[in-house]
Length: 285
Image (cartoon, rainbow, N blue to C red):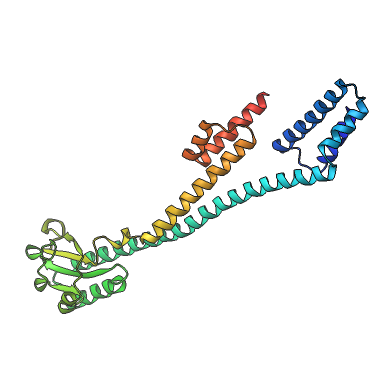
């Protein structure tokens, strides 16, 4: 029925027929009109009249075209917004988390550099001359607050105790900041980390001890708010992408419980598997 073909083509004149949903909708509309016309013909109505009646029942071309493109537009906008929303949350999460990890790595490097440089000075001058003490102070002072240190001190090994609160600060050969400031600013929650120079390794009988203002090394401390933001953004991204993949699969009439589970569990990897299998099936057919 050539007139029905022309009528349907006029409705889908500017539509993207590469879109599977659009193509399927066109075929369904054409089939509906043909079935309607055939039914009328079976009741004794001529073919031309049957087609006219079927088209009139179906609606005016402009009305159908407007409704069709409105539905298609809404679906495409919805999919686009869901996907863009997922990408936006992923980017925000990475932008928040990545710089924090870089900062964390920088703190670790500064900490290692400080301790190693102090170690080197002590090994070079076990007598701890005033010049060496001044050099140690210059190294420690540079990153003292950044690293969240309470104190750093050098002890005779036999009097160095790094059990909570038992360090004999008065016995220190060197301490920064000075003893009175250290005692005054003693944190309620802290722990000590210590390294001991043995005579066989370094030729010294000294121990280096340092204490942080808190239970953990600053390089391991990432503000909880950073973790919360990152995990929240990642969860929202994961959910939005899974929903987007489910809708795409549904439009392709391939949505199953198995694929839904794959999208939620494996996210973008699951969707790439879905696309690969879909292409393979299309090649076979």
